[in-house]
Amino acid sequence: MGIVETFFDDLRKNINETLRDTIKELIQQEITDKWLSKKQLAEYWGVSPRWIENRLDEIPHSETLPWRFKKSLADQWRMGELKRLEVEKMNKVSIKNYKSDNFRVGQ
Image (cartoon, rainbow, N blue to C red):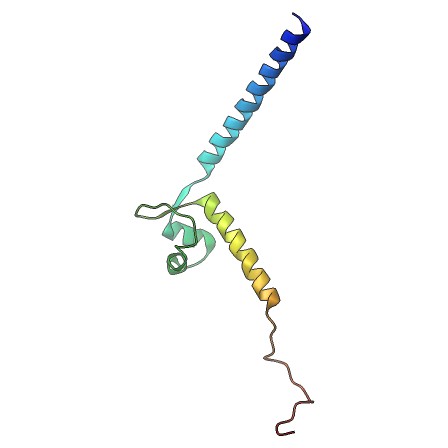
């Protein structure tokens, strides 16, 4: 077997191994990535089903009734939502406990 044949044989083996590993990983993800009902998703996240209903325009879900939520996609959305809420919270300034001695009415 020449150099070219050896090269293509090794390339073919590497491609087959990579494809086999990738397919196994995708199958495993599909097995563990469940579809959840609204109630199941609410329980999983620790929120009310109403909270889920109020965000149906935002949370990725199936187009048919009853709505189903792919766990991985819903989690990705939730992580983005949590990050957005953290940024909003950091940008808010609370003045409810602020007292100033310099403020006088009518001066």
